[in-house]
Every structure is written in C-alpha cells, then in structure tokens.
Image 1 (spheres, rainbow, N blue to C red):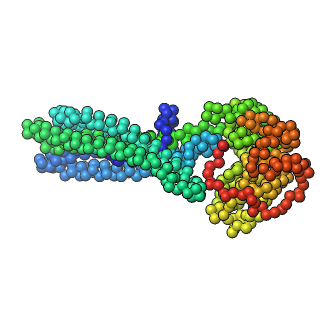
Image 2: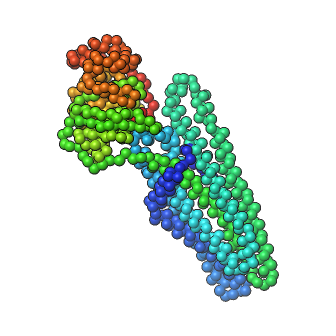
Image 3: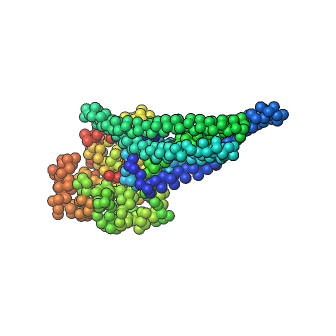
Length: 628
C-alpha cells in the first residue's frame, strides 16, 4: 500500500451535488486523456495476466525439469519471456500513468480556472486567495491521479481473483485453506477505504484554512509590520497546527494499522496454504511444481491488500476533486448572441433592479433611465450600495430581479465581445496586468492599442509625466516600477480610457488622487475620451457638481435622482452626505462656492505637479478585483 499522501487544502464538507460535480469533472479529465487512460488499463491488465500465468508456467517448467523432459528448456525460455513481459508492461504502465496524471491535472486546472474567471467577481470572492491557489494546485494534482488510479485499481483486482480461481484448479483443499482467511482481508480493505477518505478530508480542511490565513498575512505584510503584530499573526496562522498534527497522525494511524494487520494476516494465509499443500504433496495428490504454483498463487491472492493502495489514491483524489470542483461549480456569467446597435449613444436603463446577497436585498427595485452621453455621479454614504450599482450597470454582476439595458439591448443578451468592447471599468484599487507599464495601459479585450493611443490615454489620466520619468518609460517592467497608490490608480484610469466604449464606469477610481489631478481627469473624461455615458461612483463633492445627473443611494434604495444643484438646495440630508466625508470636508465647508464653480469652471485649474498630491496613499496590495 502507498502512504496517505494527502494534498494541501481545506474546505467545507462537500454536499452531494458538489460530489457529483467532482465526479463529472473527473470523468471529463479521463475523457481528455481517454486513449492514454485506456493504454494504462491495457498495460496493467496485460501485466496482471502475465503475473497470473507466471506461477503456472514456472510450476510446469519445474515439473518438466525434475522429470528431465526434453521440452524443459523450451518452457524455461517461455518462463523467462513471461517474466520479461510483466516487467516491460509494468514499465510502460508507469510511464503512461505519468502522462495521464499530468494531462488530467491540467484539464482539471483549466476547468477550475474557467469556472473562476467565468463567474461574477462576487462569486469568485467566495474563496479566499490562499484557498483558491490550493484548489488549483495541490488539490488538482491529487485529483488528476484518479483516472490512472482507477485503471490500476481495476487491474489490481485481477491477480487476486484469478489466483483464487487457479488455486481451485490446482487443488480444492489448498484453495479452501486460503479462503478461510479471505473475509478478514475484505473487511480490512473496506475499513481502510472508509477511514482513509474521512481522515484525508479532515486533514485537507485544516490545511486549506491554514493556507488561506498565510496568503492573507502575505497580502497585508506592510500593515502587519507597521502595527507590530507579527507575533500575533504568526500565532493566528499556526493556531490550527495542533489540529493539523492530530489529523495527520490519524491518517498515518489508519495506514499503519491496516499495514500491520495485513502484514500479520498474509503470512498466516501463506503458511496455511503451505501446510495443506505439503500434506497433499505427501499424499501424492499434487506434484512439487503444483505446490510451488499454489504458493505463488496464494501470494497473489493475498495481494488483495495491495488493492488498498490504489483505492486509497482514488479516495484521496475524489476528496481533492470535490474542492477543485467547487470552482467548476461557480455559476457562470453567461452571454447571449446579441450585439449593440451601431452608433448608439450609450443609453442605460435599469428596470426594477433588485440584488440579493446572503438572503437579504442590498439593492431594492431601482428603476432609472440614464440618457446616452451623460455623466452620472452615484453618491451615498458608505454601504449605500454604490459599488454594487456600478457592478450591475456594467454587468460585473447580474441582478436577481429586473434587468439592465444598454441602448435598448439587455446586457444578459450581449455577446462577451460586445459587452467588454463597449463597457469599460476603472477601479479604486486597480491590479496592473502585463509585463510593462505600456502593456498594463493597453491591457484589454480586442486588438492591442498602438503606442500613440497608450500615451494619449496616459495623458488623459495624468499618468504621462511620471511614466516618462521611469527608467525605461512605457517599457519599464511593472515589477521594477516604484509606484505610489495614486500612480497605480492613474494607470488604471489610463487603461480604462484606452478602451473606452459607449459606457464607462469609474468605481471610486480617483480616490487616491490629489484634488488638482482629480479635476484634470474629470475634464479629460468630458473632453478627450471617446464620447459616451460615464458612471462615476463619487465621494468628492466636485464629482457630483460636474455631473449631468446625480443618483443618490441610501440603504440600497435610490432616494433621489436629479442635478446636484437641485438636490443640494432642497435636501439637507444630501448635503450631509458630503459634509460627513472627511476627504471632502474642505469642499463642503463652502458648498455654494463649489456649486458655483461647477457652472463657471474653465481651464483655470492650477497645473501643479500631479505626482506630489497630498492625498496620495501607498499602493495597496495587489489582489483580485471583486465587487464589494
């Protein structure tokens, strides 16, 4: 038996639907390498047949040689050929097994990654980054061994079953002596399979939780260092280590106990066969060669315990597959066959939109028509639902009720290409993807933009000055570019501007910028970027002032919609939204001046250095963008 080589990971105990999904994923992985898997089964079965033939050929050869039969040398060569064939087939099966394991693992990882990237961000965020990494690496590797392990397990059953049949053909009493202990071996096999599956599942749960905590700590390393809580975090990460040790010892106890019992049982069976066979030999019922064959067949039959190794690999793989299948089972963000009408202005309509999270509605029955080409500021206190509104507007998430239409076409019915070609996003904490700074700006669906388009987008986002000062300008590798939080955010804006379509959603995308740079970006958004509808999740008063329409959210409901001037004059609660925001306190102290500025604003903003804004924060840890 092989040792219980458990994979890293943890997750909740799988539900029946998840278990069935895991089995379907394993079947898909097996089909992906169907030819090689069949070859593994064929080689292992052929090797098992050779192993079954070997005792009979060896025993008959011995009898012929003892009688000095002229055919003895020929049978000796046949015996050597059978042994050589068994060795060669085992070697071929081992090589093919490696190929099947690799291909099956790759298939499972692709399925898991497709499920992860094909779902809405809030569904992907169900699993912590550390857990996701473990599911796609260690667990997928363990699960990828299942197709070949099943082939080995099926072939491993052939020698014991064939050996028992051969014992009956050689001598009934010798076979009965062996069969007396066979039920104990079967019970041992069943208990081992059951206990192994249970202990491995618990071990993986604890290990995956530990991996998740470790990744969290690595992502927040600066905060931990600044807070001086390294010892506390170390203790938190290692808190379940004793439990992990307990589960690990339990796995080895199951394996060791089964090994000890099978080690004691199998020699007893062989001695029983030897004793009965010796008596039958003395009585002249069987010959020396038949006694040798009976002993070899008894050894093969007792090898039913070796099946536990293959079954344990299948059990471990299925447990791991259920964790990888949790990614495959994520609900896909499906797309339709429709395209947008040519030259549409970007009119966005929300009809009775309702979004539920955790059993509670977080956006309540929002109905709104946003005229094409307008700039809309979405405002509200923290937790009002602004980011979720932005996610639904650009279809990073689907509403649970109602629908969202762009130029009269429901977003659900658009093709993925049409949706991402015409709907763009910029986030408050962007993740830069690509090798160089220029690649990060040009990153997106469709053809790669040229250098001029990349530089134009960077200028519009206020990023061109500091990019030019980098060691290799736009060719500077991201890993070697020292970027502040505001600079990262400007590059994220440049990426959105570079791929601006008829709808552009800025989800708090200027929060790390100083006031001067933020206003320059707002002007560029209105004048230099491709015309279209702009939805701006706003915290600054100036963003609301410059908007054509303000959507005011409160507790997931649209409390009001109108121009900033109208809302400011008629509702003190609206003014309080900005007065309570520390980042806009200076603007709110003179709200009327700010409102006047909106109507008279020209290009007289100070052109101070945008790289040295007082509001800039250090670059946040890079992590997956997800709807909040």
